[in-house]
Length: 417
Ligand code: UD1
Image: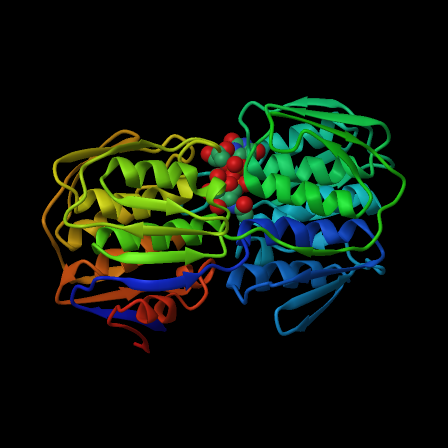
């Protein structure tokens, strides 16, 4: 098993380029099932989660090819309707094939995603939407089976603006009969990106990026090419890393607009953030000030940046409060940060953090993807040696994080245990 080893503190300086957004690529791969034609995705990073999504679509008969960074998907022959427990348990987003499968072939059997490290994460909103659109859904033996001769457009109000439910329903609606309106839809940039891919395939979608999305169903969709938007969470992670090390880093290949919630908080903490057309420069001198954050659906502060921002709070002057409203159990990084000397108390959905001047290196464990990122950047501000175990979580969403941090001046290596 690989681990990351970080020796001593550093000041990050230089430039770093972010990869395409994992959370855009996953639904786009699923959406490729909506057409018998070939879809080509460019600039696809070699991430573990992307591999799993490739496996999922392959397992139902799609042909997937890789040439350098482009991914070719052809789902002309769908010869299975089942996504197994073995695949779905590895990645919850596998569930995103449900909408495309129901819309294209009218049938799907998929394992329940089950519990998850960051909360129970139900799928009731997805199922409620499909059933309103006319799908017949049964649950049993850990699997969901759904049938629909032809999905019908409906008005669907989501109780919570779930990203996955919005994506799944959007994809299903593209080939449904009539008009689907998704109310209280998620507004994340990845939703807009998926809508742009679906539009290029021939879908008729309006309102993506607002809370009401309107989709006119069409009879068929065609293949297309697409490059996903830059990964705003990877970018945000390097921005926080720059600020907490008192560094000066240009994060390149980003959409600064997507980073606004993180930029605003870093500025509130005293860091300087300059925005360019496709880059941001983050500089900080000395310790950051304390700040409060509350995670919210976009354009609120992203839950996927909560753990990394907590690392910054651990090192800030004074008391900060982080409130997690999106997921119910997304504080698993706290115990690990405490091992590094952080002073954090949990009160329900809030964490109260007393900043300290420096952390101390320790053996810690990446409990999930973003927790791993929080620990990696904490290691950059710790005295002595930090060892991060279970880093396969990090590989789900960050490409070569150790190489990128090393290029910025960190003393970090990946090694086998
Ligand atoms: C996506 C992102 C994930 C991010 C999250 C919130 C992908 C692959 N993953 O996950 O990185 O942290 O958005 O920005 O894009 N919920 C229900 N019922 C449902 C669906 C969701 O109660 O049917 C709840 C969840 O339990 C959770 C909240 O809604 O508490 C948000 O979930 P959702 O927006 O669906 O997140 P994901 O799409 O799973």
